[in-house]
Length: 360
Image 1 (cartoon, rainbow, N blue to C red):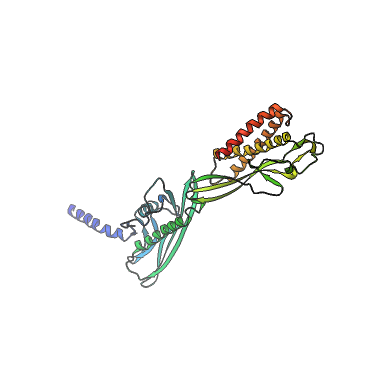
Image 2 (image 1 turned 60 degrees about the vertical axis):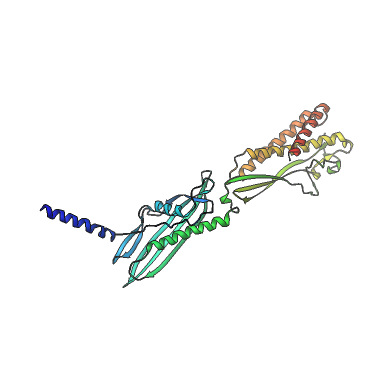
């Protein structure tokens, strides 16, 4: 009795592997001798399986005369990570870490006639990376193929590998086409400031080489009801544009500091050098506030995802500061009537303006 039991157990062990093999087909994604891509600066950081039914299963195929499951050796996220990582460039701290999401990966067949099988294979993956802990969607790849075959052995590995290779080829091409052009690939911000000085009929743009003259003050008889000798209307603004360059998104901010002739006035009897110098300092103060605005932006936490709102906020803060500086100037100088205070402001502002243009 003992011998029969042992013999039966041995026969069961010998039969079970063959029986198990016919219960499913396992696709081993064997790796090629060399990677597909070696030169481009990206690597596969992570693969996640977001199919409705994640895991190793791919679908069902016709084999061994019946319909049986087809699977990967392990979970799809691990198997595809290993396969793609072998093909893509190796991990590099200077390269872009790519996250791939599997939206769909399936292989299904059905018998439609004696010795005739039809099948379809589908793949849908998405590529992204994380910038400042925020996901940045790059591109996706979606494809499917249908086929008809006789009912005999079939190379499923080759079929699935072909689709996986095509997805990585698609991403490689997308990266090549978008490098240095697409803001989604920018890894940081680069601020560039320019000055707008285009002459306009009613506007004088600030220039240290072009001080104000009385002809710039178009209103000659002063402002009705005002007790002051003169007033200059100065202000500043900016125009922004962005464009990718290398690994950065360049923010080019054009700054304009100006006075409006038709809103500036000076009484005829007060048009002298002292009064004009007082108004020039008002213009200089506006120019200096623009330097403060630039410093604000350099220190601000600008992000590629939302830099516009921060720039606008800092602009409003700088504008508020400009009004405060102008009021303090008029208050301390008595609108130019306090000669000592006026001389002190002249000296201080002249040195600050000189420092600005010395650096530039």
